[in-house]
Length: 260
Image 1 (spheres, rainbow, N blue to C red):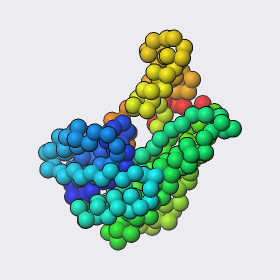
Image 2: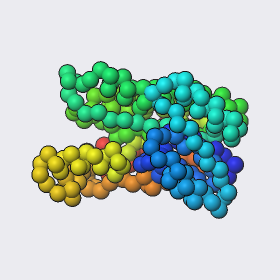
Image 3: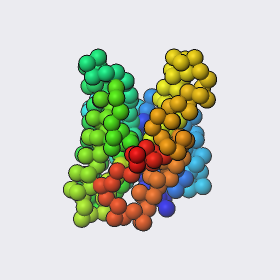
Image 4: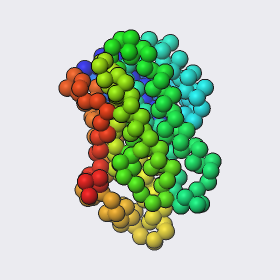
């Protein structure tokens, strides 16, 4: 379905970003990966997913808190693949503390990576998408773009900002072939969330399984994690012809969290 298209997915060397990159590769899209840590294993996984379509996979290690590095990444993608047809803004970090105790540098970093980076990639990707009259911008927000949770002030504020940016991007391109939508996952078992499970188990002296049940029980009625694979399939839908008039939505995949 996406043969000949190129998708750039930020924060895609693990977790949700990698799940989305794999799903798009399976549909024939070339992929530009971005992120820290091991690159070869995720690159091999994405190449394998798109092997039948003969896709190409690039990588750029831009620090998503730095506008100049984001600009270099977008230039690299254009030089390597012609243009970015599908932009997935997924990079994100988390820090938990009460507002009065929240370190200022953590607030600034979360705003830069979780919100400002999406603005920078979007402003740089839009001209080529508009010229081609086709593009898909998918912002990975969070159920925390729709509701709040205590001790997550920066994350919640940034993700609400991502949902707002999604709506404005969609409206500014409403009469074109360029769409913008947000995915709002609940708990997804990524390395980031696994750390929270481990911390809860250690703090309360309980098993990992019990800690997982507690974590999900607090917020997610389905009592199950959303998977990166499910989120990848939703991203594929947003790229399909069926989603051509889906514009500016914040689509929660949260096991009923926001329905309460």
